[in-house]
Structure formats: C-alpha cells, structure tokens
Amino acid sequence: MYFKLHSGTLNGIGGEIITIEVDLSRGLPTFSIVGLPDTAIRESKERIRSSLINNGYKFPMKHTAINLSPADLKKKGSYLDLPIAVALLCATEQVISRMEEPILMIGGLNLDGSVQQNRGILPIMVAAKAAGFKKIIIPSQNYIEAGYIEDVEIIPVNNIVEAVRVIEGDSEIDTVKFNTSWDETDAEDEICIDYEDIFGHESAKRAVELAVAGAHNILLIGPPGSGKSLMASAIPSILPALNKEERLESAIIFSSRGIDNSSIMKGIPAFRAPHHSASSSGLFGGGTNPVPGEISLANNGVLFLDELPEFPRGLIEKLRQPISEKNITVIRNGASYCFPAKFMLVTAANPCPCGYYGDDKKECQCSDNQIRNYRRKFSGPILDRIDIRIQVNRVSPEHLVFCKKGENSKSIKKRVTAARKKQIERYEDYSFKNNSEVPPGLIDKLFILTAKHRNFLVEIMKRHDFSGRSYHSILKIARTIADLDNSENIEIDHIIESVAYRFI
Ligand SMILES: [Zn+2]
Image (cartoon, rainbow, N blue to C red; front, side, top):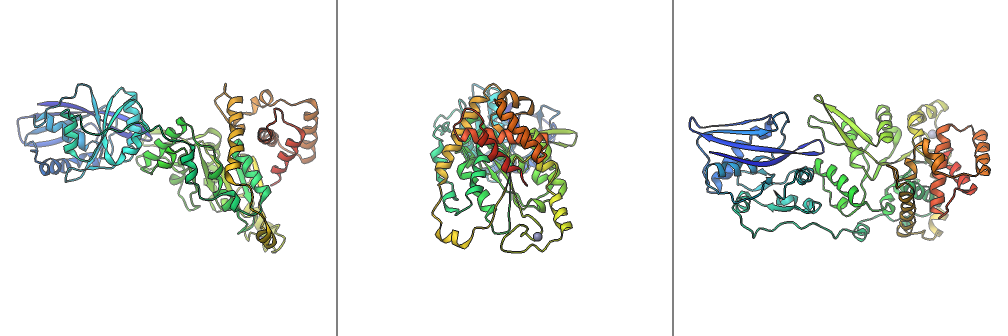
C-alpha cells in the first residue's frame, strides 16, 4: 500500500518542494521517517497518531516507511504533519483521493487534528507556484498571506477533516481569492506621526525629505531631547508605497520569520529600529536554521539605528558590506544563505558623550579626548556611506509656543513620490532606481554638468579638501535636490545646498 503527496519546507527565506512517499507493508508495527528529517518531523508520529484517532480514523498498525525527498535536503519544522497524516489515510484506503492534478499541502497538526499556523508559508507557496502546482492546502490562520499568490487555487483548512474533504473532491470548501484591492489609501490610514505635528526643525525636515526622495542614508546629530528620534520615527509617513514586486519580496522575509506582514501587503515599507543591545545574528541574520535579521526585515524600507555610538563597534563596521552590496550572506553548517538587505539607513547620535557639545544653552562636560573617542565609533568607513549628515538643534520654548503648524506629511510625500518617479524613469535601463545608488562610474554619464558647474565644484573641493567619495555624494544629493525642484539639470544652487550636508 503506497501513496505519494507533495509538501514544502523552509530553507532560509526560500521554499523547497518535498515529495512524501508513504509505504505500508506487513510486519511489526513501526513508523520510520527517512530523508534528513529534523527533530520536529521525527516527533510528528505522536501528533499524527492522536490527530487520526481523535477524528475517527485508524492509525495503521503496520510496518510504515515514510520517505522524504530530495534526500540531500534537510527538512525542518512541523509543516509535514498534515500531508503525512493525509497520505497515511490514502495509503490505508480510509480516504480515496479524487485529485486529478498534483496537490501541495502544508501544515502542522495539534493532537485534536486542528491545523497549526506556520511561519514561512508564503515562500513555500511561491515555490509551489513556480513548480507548477495549481492547488495548495494551507493552515487557515495563514490565509491572508495567500492573497499574494495569483493564478493558484489556495485552500485554507482548519483541521485534518477539512483537508480530507478537499482530497475527496468536495468543491464547497472556500478558496482564497487573490487580493487586488491594496492601494496607497490603505497605507495612509496607518501612519501615526505626521511632520506637521513636529514644530520647528525646518532644516532637519528638509534634510529628511531629501534623504527619502533619493533614498540617501542620513545621520542626525543633536543633543538629547532635540527631537532626532521623533524626526526619524515620522519617516514612514513620507515613504512612497512599495510596488508589487517589493511587497512580495519583503512579505516573504517577514513570513520566514513568522512576523505579521499585513502592513507590507498594504504597501507600507518596513521601519525597523533595533536596540543597540541587539546581537549580531539578530541584526544580520543567523541561527541554527538561519533566519534573516533586522537589516533584511528593513529591506525596501528603513533601518533606524538610534544612539549609533552605543552599538558595538564591530556591528557598526559590519554594516558596511550590506550597505554597499544590498544583501548579506550568512554561512551555517557549510551552507550559505543570501538575504536581501536593501535599506535606507537612518541613524541618530549625540554629538558627544554628555550630549551637549555645540549646544548654545548647556555646556559640554566632555574632554577633547572623550569626544574624539566617541566620534571615532561612527566616523571613517560608515560615515563615508552616509550621504546626508545634519545637526538637529533643540527648539527654543518661544518657537514651540508661537510656531505655526508645519507642512503635513501627505504633501511632503507627494513631492517625494514625484521625485522618486523621475529617478525610476531616468534609470530604467539600469539595475538601480534611486540617485543614492548610482555607481561612481556612471555619475559623469548620467548627471549632466556644464563647464561652469565643474569649475564651481573644483573650487569647493579645493576649499574644503573633500575626498572623491564626498564629491560623488555631493553630486548625488544635488541630483535629488534638482529632482525635488523639478529641474532637468543640476544647478549651482543645488550644489551649494548639497555641500551643506557634508560638514559633520
Ligand atoms: Zn559633551
């Protein structure tokens, strides 16, 4: 008595298709699973046995062999409980399958036969669709994620009995329809901090708008209580909505970690703000069965590191590679996993250990040496990768009391979105889409400068002793300013403003 079914497992952030073969023969009652199962799968016997008995089925008292293939892939998690249980029912002819095309089934089981919610269902569904499956059974709790998958019939089930009904050809079970109703209006409802509620700080707001418009990394420096964190926390209110591909890419990463991805589905980019006590694997990804870390959860969105100098120096240094390469490779047990990490870095720091260096009201208590050591933590290679650095000063009480409300996030977002659209059009023949991503080798080709502008730049470079990297940053920011200004070319004014963001 033999039966074959398909299921899936999670490998990093990717889904893998698994074939389950069940064979029953005469002999002593045994239950063995071969094909590199992990502990969770090896322990599935008790869950499957109880699920079958508690729902009126018989657990076969025969020599039972279950083979999982491909044989060289390690199978992880409890995803295979439900398909193994259903395959046992079919192999023992307690259930007759009327499925004409291959079906893929995923779900862990509780002892009463109800199906458990699983992490990583979305990447498995994506892999199943790519492999040509037209019907997928998933745990009902994961049904929202199924809305991402087009042209596949997805059937959420609550328990083993419902899965059996599907196998027996019952057509009355509800399937999930592809969700096409996501749009930007959904996204705006969930934004809580609006720039109009942050009083003063006009130059810092301008810098943040620029940073978002060109996806530039930004550093906010200022004394405690100056509003740096608030300024950063309002960034989601002006981030352009994710497109369809970005939503799916980010939702897969969230799904692999078992984190709610419903706001990603609405097009709201991720905003991740890990604490400085986060571990290296928490930030960059890792673990025995590697999962993506915070920098990958921030993919297509923002990674906000508040109090940057409080992070261990090694972690700050380690950020350089993902900032440049837009991904991170984690190596575990001889296998390597590549996780996307295309984020905009937003970071904040006090100007010195006491926090008041350069403040006009309070005196700094730090020695030159203390300030030098403190700044060394975020200077050098990491600072080189931050295009915009801005001082955020404390707002005076007079300003707070008498200041009028500023521009609201909705109208800032409109400008930012228009500027991003211009960049996407300009770079349509390239693999990047924002000004911040233009490689040095293409700057001369893509940014058109007159002789007058070039001479002006030479003057500035000489006067301030700027490096080559600074030169490229200045031009990229100037390009973003020009885009916000609706200007075809970079003008002298754009360059002048751009230079002002390099003095930290
Ligand atoms: Zn100080």
